[in-house]
Image 1 (cartoon, one colour):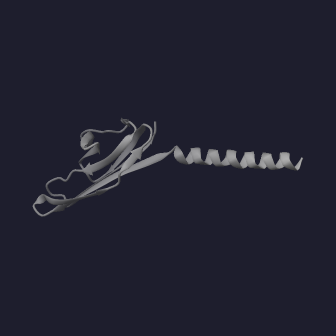
Image 2: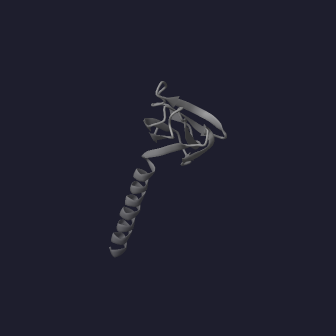
Image 3: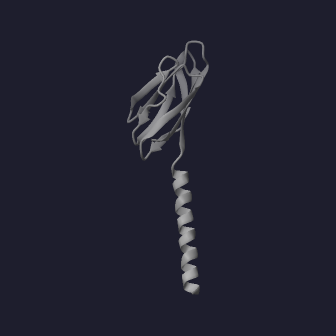
Length: 120
């Protein structure tokens, strides 16, 4: 009887851990990028941001920031671009590695974009 109770407790703990990890694995992801102007506006500009690695496709659900244009990069090329005149919301990024670069307008000292994605 004690062995059966012990096995039941272990099973419940393992099941709970599996469900918790599934809830964490499924969720929202953030991709952000910032460009800071250098001398002569585009010369010596500094880019900051994160690199997002997706193991499965993810859907873009929100884009916000001060950048009027931006591009999502993957494998050394612009994969998807958008801005105030072209929304990328509802687009799906396949599994892969991504970064985003914010574009500066003539009078901007810096521009930032934050892209929120969710499991597709």
